[in-house]
Structure formats: C-alpha cells, structure tokens
Image (cartoon, rainbow, N blue to C red; front, side):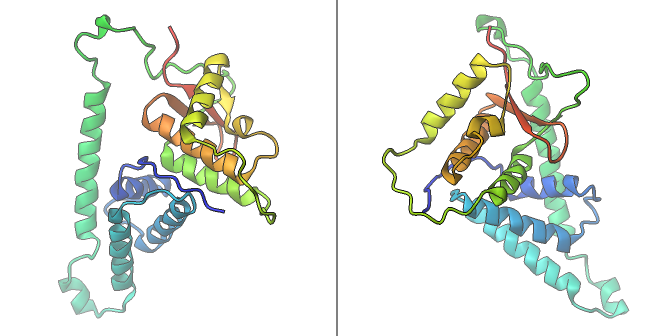
Length: 238
C-alpha cells in the first residue's frame, strides 16, 4: 500500500548538503565526497519512501555528487593532479554562498517587525521550559527524517492487506497534534503515534510534524541522538 503525499518541507539540496557537512563535523573546504554522497542518497531514499514530491534539483545534485565522487576515485598522475582543479571547487563555492545567504536571512528573520504591538504579543522562540537536569538539543527537518527512518525500520512489516474504511487526511492529523500540544505542555513523537502504531499513522504523524515545523508552529527537541523526540509549541498561548 502506498500513500500519495505532496509536501514542500525541504529547503533544497544545498541545505541537505550543509546539514550532512555539519553532522559529520567536516571542513566545508575539504568535503569527504564519498561519505557525503552515500548519506545524501540515503536521504533521497527516505524521501521516496514517504512519497514526497521530490523536486528535480535533488536528483540533479545527486548526479553531480556521483560525478564528483567518480572523478576523485579515478587514479591520477601527480602532474595531472597538480594541474587539474579540485572537482569539489564549484560545489564548495555554491555551498559557501548559500550558507552566507542563509545566515543573513536568519539574522533578518530574528529582527522584530515594525508594528509588533498591534498584534497579539507572543513569547520569543527561545522560550522553551525544560527540566534542569535534561539538556535538550533542537532538531531540524533532516534530524527528524533520520529519527523517522529508525522508527520505521523498527516497525513490523505489515503482511496483511489493509482495507481503508475512512481516508486519513494530513490536515486532520495536523489539527489533532496542535490540539494535543495546546492541552499539554509537551508531547513525545511516540506519544502521538501510540504504543503499537501502524505504518500509516507513523508516516502521517511525521509529515504533520514536518509541516508544523515548516510553519514555525512546533519545535522538536531531543536529549540524546537516540532519545525520545519531544515536541513543543513554538509560541506560548497568551
């Protein structure tokens, strides 16, 4: 059974590459192209498994990475190596430019808007109450995608044919999560899907959380790489 879902949640292939570079703690000017390419392709497979409407630019970047990887794996003479430019140079240029624009956009986005007092005053995004003995790290969409892969891989394969009596809508799942978060201080991802979730529930919950994160209505945190994912409202209700 497949679930047809189209959701614009990722910011583009360069954003995914920057995430992988930061995750591997490597120098952007000396990218281990083989490892990064393999991880990039794994993320594309995860996006395909979710039936996300993947833009062609992701596939173009995948081809570019594979091409660079193949060029770097080919044996070269020392003289040729000295004369030939680094195959990663153009990619590094694109990444550094994208990173600069992204940081500038974040700074602009953090500024207070004129006329803010005209609207309902909201709590700053940095305000998230947590236990003093628990240091939480905020997750981005790629961190959440990696956690989702681990959850799905732990599910038992459904061998029986499932007949859909009532169609599940992503908008309904989004509303359910928002109502749950408004009633409770925070909720874990596993708390949303239940103890024995179906694959369908996990996928729709994951997509709903991603959409809420994109809209900056929800923030996701984790105390450890394999710990429970805790969700908070991005702004407190006044």
